[in-house]
Image 1 (cartoon, one colour):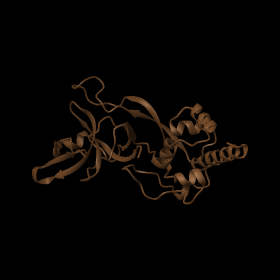
Image 2 (cartoon, rainbow, N blue to C red):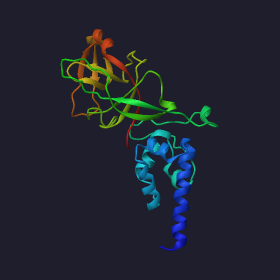
Image 3 (cartoon, helix red, strand yellow):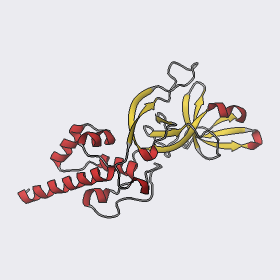
Image 4 (cartoon, rainbow, N blue to C red):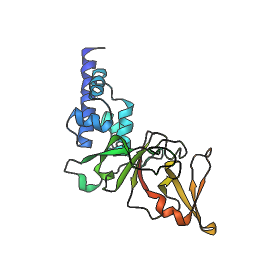
Length: 232
């Protein structure tokens, strides 16, 4: 590899990293590392290799809807308009331009029961997640999907944002429900008005649906799913 080629690669990496900082409003490696959920040393390693990891591109696409080609080469468009893989993606709103967007560090709760099958589910934090302000709200509950029953819509390991202020059940929407013995589950709720019950539908065909009496459902609904962060 010639000296000119090495300088070229270095310039391209620096330009790509500058585009990441510009698009996210981040200024330091510490901030970007926190956003990407990586160690700061990983940025130094990527710079040394002169290569932007695919995992960065995926994360930035998920959170900001950023076009990987724009990040790497500066090719328009900057944003991709359509989501893929079941993730609900960020679309920039006009009010954010001209100022640095805020990010919030929020706790991520476990879905399992904390002390055994006879105890009610309660929020116990296991980690934190940095959330762009477009996805933050005071009523936000974030959990990490522990099962595969909602794949491919929500994959195991995905971060799921739940709006605790939205408990009115709309047939066909996704909700977090406090279920006896199981803990917190996420299902697509369908109304079965003929039998006065709700069907808790699993997207994964290898899992069976569950039934919940309509009169008791209101007390068990934690909130409605607002967004999902997951790899595509």
